[in-house]
Amino acid sequence: MANLLTLEDLDLGNLSGTRVFLRVDFNVPLSEAHQVLDATRLEEALPTLRELSRAGAVLLLASHHGRPKGKRDPRYSLRPVADKLVELLGRAVRFAEDCVGEPVEKVVREMDPGEIVLLENLRFHPGEEANDPAFADQLAALAEVYVDDAFGAAHRTHASVVGVPHRLQRKAAGRLMAREVEALGKLLGEPARPFAALLGGAKIEGKIDTLQNLLDRLDLLLLGGGMANTFLAAQGHDLAASLFEPDRVELAGGILEHARSRGIEVLLPTDLVVTDDLDNPGRVETVPVDRVPAGTKAVDVGPETRKAFAAAVGRAQTFFWNGPLGVFEKPPFDEGTRAVAQALGSCPGFSVVGGGETVAAIHQAGVADKIGHVSTGGGASLEFLAGKVLPGVAVLERGR
Image (cartoon, rainbow, N blue to C red):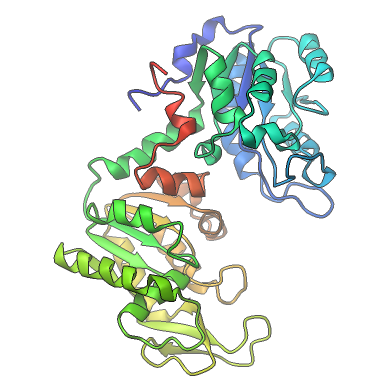
């Protein structure tokens, strides 16, 4: 945090009439009727947005949405997001039909201090993901100051994330970006002990670097979801038709051995909820991990595992969680994830939660306000905790 440029570095008292390119992460789910289904990311950006608007900045909000593959696609338009933003702010928000070009420049020229415009989806142009210099030039020409509050995109080398701030001398991290870096940085610094981490989700892939970077810092490692199946297989368990990664079994075994050698406690599921068919289950039962019936697959952790995990949460002074413990999107196979979410609401220490499904579980359990930090960036938070340099953070460091 000491090296990160913040809004204080912009001299907020002298921003009136200054055009500010504010990179936000408004990549939110939309219904078939093009209504915003979850406004969490919009709400998280409001403090920065309001602060800059109150300072009199001319605010140009820029975001990606979905994967339109560099072409204009009405399914990924940000217009519904602009409508939701009006509702959240209780004030007018302009919408630009594109993010570059003369029509956008005209809108910006007509804006008064404190006004807000949301630009159309950055990814309607192939230059965004390619970090094309010409596209970055066009975006940068719209503004005089750059602010990034899109931590969820900080691991991308895209034009709006790295190209624009390289072209504008005045730049800073928004309040959300700074909060993300500070909270996640605590986990890599000197966290209060015991320090526990729960990693779930379908696969080890994508989390292995994070796990290996965190492992020696941990006192306790909890593993769930399909990811845990690979570790159970490394212990010699026959998981029948359950999802696991055969090519990662040796790696999982090595991680378990390393943890043992360092005195790190590892909690794996001891019982599993299994079914014969995920979509049309004719058979659902709870079994010990060493008695998974042939033809069935693990879809959640069982009640004994839930109790053990909840107890571990209860004694952690620092806790990090990413990834569900079962097939969270298909009730009733979300019960293990929900149980841990409930327990985390009573965690005595500093807790950090990241990843879409994990964050959804926290909100559904009604404990989001009891969590130390709910990260808006699943992939970005994992890369940060893996010790990797995030391009969108690095470009906002002093001296860059």
